[in-house]
Image (cartoon, rainbow, N blue to C red):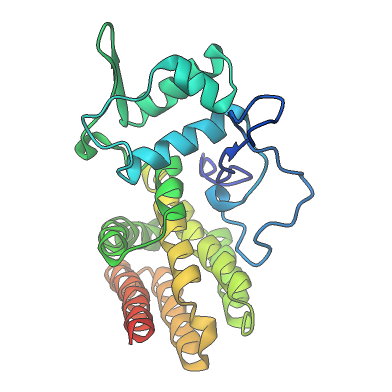
Length: 288
């Protein structure tokens, strides 16, 4: 029986802690930002699971801040995290929350704690870039072409195999789901957000049709790549690009429906490559 992707739903990116003002009740200590749940933040961004900006716990927010400081190099590999008392004062959290934060960062391969040594940042070779949080934190720092190409290579390897498997295992319901999201992409002629959301659901539908739990679990990689595409260059911005993208996705579905795994895999490689090429061209134009 097919399970749902673990990265869908209302899991979200985090709000960073906000520094208090000197003279406030806590004398300038850094506090976790409390955001009104009704606030309209980034209304135009697609509602991707890890990028949806919902209210999060103190644990999640502090983990994001420290994770970002590690990923950005502000706390480089080999460096020790500040002493416990300093972190507690900075964020105004309990020792229990801090212990959970350290457990989270340890599980993601970012840090290691040793008695009498302290907590040290691990080399980036240990970081789990397939972790949905790490990808979301990395995305929050902005995208560079090296990282986007890395994402594209992983997508080609995994999604091409998923498309090939879907051609063999898809059901009529799977096909209907793919075509429904393809229609959503085709109809999104003036909304980059609507296009991005339909695009994401299209690719996740292929993952589901592959009937491979491991392929489905990599949806965070797809979300990150499509968020990059949305932010940097949406095909909706140009009519010809929009038409090309929709046609390319249609070729994937047609091949899956025909049971032609090799053609489906090739069409998937082509559409991923087209997306990267579009971003490269857009980036080059902005630099001129």
